[in-house]
Every structure is written in C-alpha cells, then in structure tokens.
Image 1 (cartoon, rainbow, N blue to C red):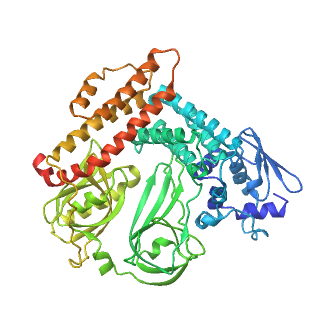
Image 2 (cartoon, rainbow, N blue to C red):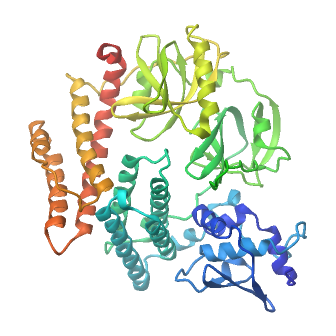
Image 3 (cartoon, helix red, strand yellow):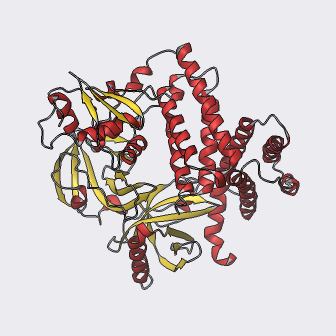
Length: 582
C-alpha cells in the first residue's frame, strides 16, 4: 500500500483519459500491454516512488509530467505510463481528489490556450540545438523507413514496429508533432500487417509511407520552423452562443485496435459550417485468445447518462467546443435544454441530395465527407464472398447510380446483417428512403459508406442542383483510361513496398512506353526516376534507400494530384454509364 497521501490521491484520480493525455493513445496502449500480469515492486521516498519496469528505472513524481525514466526518451514514455498503471493498483479506490490542480487536463478539455505548442508558436525561430535534434530525428526516421522498404513488408517483424515506435518517441522529444503522428500510424499499420489483420490495406500503407517521407524531407531543410512541426493536440475552440444539435445517427466502429461508437449530429443553424458534427467515443481494445470486451461508454457534458441514451433527444449545448467537425466532450459544456428529436424537419430535408452528380462535385478523393442522399430506387444488392464485401447499388430520379459498400469483419457482422435486412425492405419501395452516408471518390467512382437509414423523411423542401459548367470533357471515358494507367504505376510502387528492394527486378519498359504514348511526360519522368533508383540499389554496393524513398514520395504525390483531377470526371461518367458497361 502506498503511504504518500498526495501520490496516492493522484494515482487514484488518474484514469485512462488523463494517462492518455500525458502522451498519446499509442503509448498508453503499449503500456497496458507491457503491464499485463506484472506486479509492482517499488520503493517510496519522501515525495517520489522508484519502480523498475521493462528493465528501466522510473522515478514517479507529482505532477506526473515531472517523472523520469532511464530509457533514452526525454519525454513521457511507455515505462512511466506502465509504472503509473502498476502503482494505481496499489491504492484503494474512492480516495478524495488531489489537493492540487497540477494534474493533467482531461482529453475532452484540450484548448488552444492550454497547449504547450501555442507557447512555442510565439517564438521567432528554432534554436540551433533544436534544429540539430530535428535533423538527427529526421535521418534516424528515414533510415528506419529505408530499412523497411529494403526488406519489404513480407519480411517485417515486431522489432521494426518497436523501432518505429521509438522513432515516434524521438519525434515527440524533438517537438515534431505531425511527424510523430505519422510514425505512430505507420507503426500501428505495420503491426496490423504482421498480425495479418483483415483491416490492413497495403495501398493505404504505401501512401502513408510516402506521405511521411515527404514530411520528413521538408523538416530536414534549413528553413524548418515551428509551424512546420505541427501541434500535439487538437485545438478545440469555443462555439459562439448556444449550439442546437439534432442527433441523426450512431455507428459502432472498430479501427485496428480501437473500438467504440461515433455519434453524428446536425447543427440546426443553417448559416453555420460545418453542418454535420461528430463525437467519437473510441477506446483501445487489446486482442487476446478470447473475444475483446467493449469499453465502457464515456459520460460527456456533465451528463449522468451515456450519450447513446440521448440519441433521440434534440440537445441545446452551452459553452460547446469544436475542432472542425469534431465535438469536444468537455465537462465545461452544459446541456442547456433537451427535447424530443424530430428528424423530419426542414433543416434536415433541405440538405438531402437528390441528384447524385452533386456527390461527384462535392466529394473528395480518398477523403470521406458526410451527406444525406435520397434513394429513388435500389437497383441491386449482394455479398461478394471473395472480397468479403456487401454492396448495394442505388439510383437517383434520373437513373444515375452509385454504390455503397461495407467490408465484412467478424466485429461488424451485425451491422452487415442489419443493412442486408433493410435492403430487403428498400427493394419493395420507390423514393421513400433517405440515407446518411460518408462519401469519397475511389478509382474514379463514387463510393458510399452507409451510416443510417430513414423511411420517414418527407419528399419536400429538397434542394435542386445545377452542376457547374467549368468541368466539360469531350471524351470523359478517357479519364478512366488514365486512372487505370495511374493505378498500374501505383501498383508497381506497392509491389516493391510489399516485396522489398532486394526482390527480383522487373522490366518496366512497356509501362513507361504506355505512359509516354498517353502523353503523360511528367508521370513518365517521375516513374522512370523511381525505377532507376530502385535498380541502382540492387546493383551498387553503396545502397541509397533514402533516394528511393524520396523518388517514391514524389511519384506518389503526382499520382494523388492526378487522381484528384481525373476522379471527379470519371465519377460523373461512371454514374451515368455503369449499367451500359455491365
């Protein structure tokens, strides 16, 4: 039993949110895994606790940010978090709150005025020592990514996951907030790959890898500054006046090792942007031999009941805080008024999309946006056993078709079954159903992810859509041809990321000739440069993985820009001609 009353009180008050806020979700997740089945062995002094964990010596102080560890990290590390988790078990529950106000702010209360990066932003320039540390971290990270590319994902193991996590810790110490996020994302996705999780997407991983390389290269330049480093916390800003929310949907989500719910709301102020707001209640889930258990639902806005039970009530919030479309769960926010929710209201009806061309003009490539769409007719629905994907094809009043897809996992079996049951009901009706969806353009087609269905939204107040005239292509089907060619180039990059630079070389001359025949000289130059760098790595004793990484990132940047320009044109063409192609 811990004797120091102040330390015991702080440990008792520390919960998942406050401990995660000390570092990030990734480190907290790792600390939980490290401490499974471990018993605390510690020594108390007057105002500290000394404890050994993972072979490192930790000294725990109040506030916890002043704790230290013998590992190389100069900031909050997984050893300190693990020590706090172990010591927390040594104090009884229900102790009074700590007598000081020095403990970390709960995650829901993150504000611009309380974040350390905002103080750094007032500095004119980084010191030479800080720049040197940043450059050292950049080189270390690029070296790790180069090693990963050389070996390939097929040879990746847990040691590379650990190395990437350490690189993220170094980035945190060097104040490289955005780089730390990307490195942790790579670490998480790499872990998914090694564990052979169905959620792993090698194309998404390749793009993430190239994006991280581009960022690191920029940070390694002489003109690096505080704004380029990014900030460690989301900036939640106070919403002016009261915020009137209409709950419009909820979705159970499993993302890698995180599980929970995302709640969707409509801001009833028609002059505000964005109109769609979300609150995410996601917590880390640790997979064992048994099925993972769901986390307890978080109480927000000083409510005495979980948010899920209020999803049929219209809410008026005072002192609300937003970060883009994300709602803060701040305890300072108050529910001023609640009443019965009426979804069949003019504010919602006026947002319903009836002309699917509007989706093509408003959606973005590989980035999801929320829409309410009217289903005039359900053309077809089926489950593909090979891709484990449930899809439904819907059309608007002019016969333009788009496809909604849901990837099947064991965790979302009930969701897929529910959507399939709803499709059986929609099939028998015409122009009755409305759907809340997230939309993005992929491979030149509009792809929907269904969130919620409504069969009671009246057919009135729907807005009309007049497409802009600036997009006009004589042969729009040619955009799809170019997209296929770009996809072939990307597949070549993905193949090298998967198999590694040391794998057998291929003859890329036919692909380069095809690119030039299509008149894409810029793409041909970047593609040839990348293949040349990869070949030089195989045939030279001085192997330069950084050059290959940089060339890959430049090529991927071109691919993404080309997709953005061609995707909308192709999506418009496909929604009018999908039936003909089949």
